[in-house]
Length: 156
Length: 200
Image 1 (cartoon, rainbow over the protein chains, first blue to last red):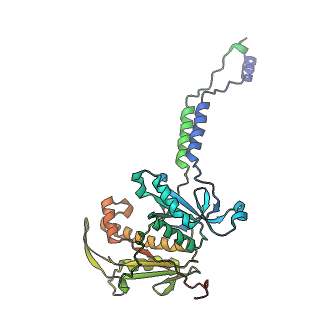
Image 2: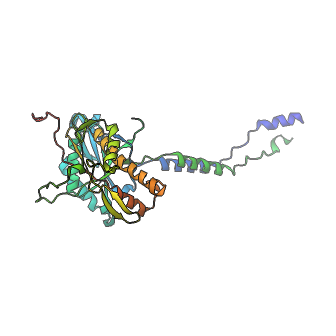
């Protein structure tokens, strides 16, 4: 008897693969959840400023972003290291901003046009001159809802 | 003998699905999707092109002037100040608890849901910055000013309703907003304390 039991043990039980789909689905869902679609490829370096009174921006479809910062290393050869503005996927000048906002707004649904928010993602070392120019352009374009992108401050 | 014939029981895997769902839910809950956060502000509407910016007559006691120069230094009501003290100073100004004649005048206003409240209706916080001010410094000042309003609203809500401002009903929130209306006006940037174009 003892001998027989020994023999039995040697045969490994087949692993059940019926749960494999579950695992795969789990992974799939996980990655679906954590993946945020990249809005654009950054051509400027942005380190957001820190603040405490920040609010979450809801409803992503109503937000348009303006990136302000120094060009990334790859672009510094062609565009220099001065602060630049990026709209969508390309570098832009302040006077193109008004057109951009108007164009983006007219592409929206009519009921959403009034609630469009512009989020300024600017590097914390940006000079206010650039930001003020942007603000003036936004005022002219009647894009008055504004959000200064910032991250939660952890320490003073 | 029974060596090869004996069937080995399969591992019961019916609970695997439960485990995987458990994990799925765990990850769903703990993963923070990168939400964009920011300070939300509203710009004033543009002036009609034919209209010159007019000087509105505001009593001196009603204005709270905050200037930020190119070195990111603060001048609040003519005094140099650290950004950390700005919030308290702004709160003192907006609230004017003791009805100080140097702080904004109080007006009794009938606010729906609250009745008659004495508020500093005409106060204005004027924020002026230099072209060379650093963005971080500007955001810090904005942050402190917004924070001052938020704290005052919270205090008021706590006093009146025993709740935080965020927990109030929308119409009560509106009423509290009326008590402490956000009035931050931003002037056109000027070249304070800079020597960029030769003048000071």
